[in-house]
Amino acid sequence: MNANLYALFASNFPGDASTCCIENHDGLFYSWDDLERATAKIANSLASLNLPQGARIAVQVEKSPEALMLYLASVRAGFVYLPLNTAYRASEIDYFLNDAEPAVVVCSPAHFGWVSSIAFKAGATHVFTLGEDRDGTLLARAAHQPDTFETVARAPDDLAAILYTSGTTGRSKGAMLTHDNLASNAKVLKDYWHWQESDVLLHALPLFHVHGLFVASHGALLNGSKMIFLPKFDNESVVRHLPRATVFMGVPTYYVRLLADPSFKREVCSSMRLFISGSAPLLTDTFEEFSRRAGHTILERYGMSETTMLTSNPYAGKRIGGTVGLPLPGVSVRVVNQDGAACAPGEIGDIGVKGPNVFKGYWRMPEKTAEEFTSDAYFKTGDVGKVDDNGYLSIVGRSKDLIISGGYNVYPKEIESVIDEIDGVVESAVIGVPHPDFGEAVVAAVVTGPNASFSEGDIIAALKTKIANFKVPKRIFFVDELPRNTMGKVQKNMLRQQFEKA
Image (cartoon, rainbow, N blue to C red; front, side, top):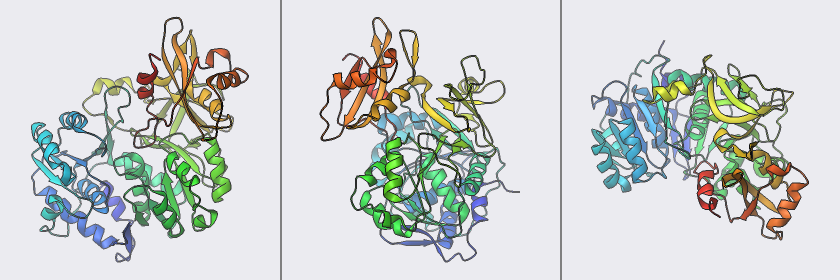
């Protein structure tokens, strides 16, 4: 049996291939037959380059249906897909291309000059362009290729993709994901989230990340469901298209922005079946307000570049705000203390995971790979969390974000939750900065609402009534917004740099 991920998707495409697979933002329809033939043309074009087995196809292009087809064609042709964040600039691209050594690089037409210079120096043999409006040299070359292609046979353990970690701390690492890693997770989520024949996915996420490329796209492809494809998230487009959709996946920022829009009303969500949130923590206030406003309870889940999805709040059972739910079927999740012993319910510890979705290792980093797995094959996620009496997991933060102040362990998420409960606070981020006496001092960056009128001393005084004194920030800094990466995660390293000498 061919374990190629594309073969799995193709076996679940609708019987009527003339039906709509993708509708883009300006109303252009792509049928399932269009998808099959376009991926065949691109796959034939790639195959004609006589690339070595396991060749990497590095891609930094804006979101479009053709960009998704390029991904599928790369996998279909048996190559390894390497998506790159569109926000990356020359120095970052230089690192990734020299580390991954792709044979083919595909970039936006406007960036061909500087990207091709870096790519050829890194050893790439081909550089193509792909634009947002069905333009570029990639499609021009593929247009002359046959529109049938026999999907290349792949074993379950063969690589399908390499995703570089976000690099907010230290050197970015390439997580190697196999065909089976991705297929097993897609099949589990199809059942766990109750994908239905009538589902329509409103796709507003980027395509260079696990959330948009794998979780969202794979879900629709495996279910044979139509996707309404938006080039990016914006309130107007989402509100306009929601009445024709049943499934929506977003980062917390999307939900915050929708709630701030008066046009987002309950009737807009009348056809919706499921709202999913991930990639960053969802504030409990947002969770509760969305339920009141939209009449839907957001389903929050937890995953990583190295593992795709690990846990999820249940579809039919109770969804609890502030938690990321229960381990998915086939996934084992444990929380352990520094000695490796299992933590009791409510006790904070390090999260380890095991399952068919867990990656093969870090690209060309065998020592780092070995460090990140325990002797019994659990991957050490680097996240810190706790499990309640019912088995629901809550993420407290990253182990690298742990603050050790005066010998005490301080978990930022705990303090942020208390600060965020203060009336007038929009959100907060707690970090540790160097301190001559304590080693690290706890400080907080706080975003307030337009009518808030309290001081640094007011917040500190309020916190002293709710948490232990060693957890109370020594300083409160008011900021207009928290720095975030493209997936909505707060970049605490930037805050540390900003406030380490304040």
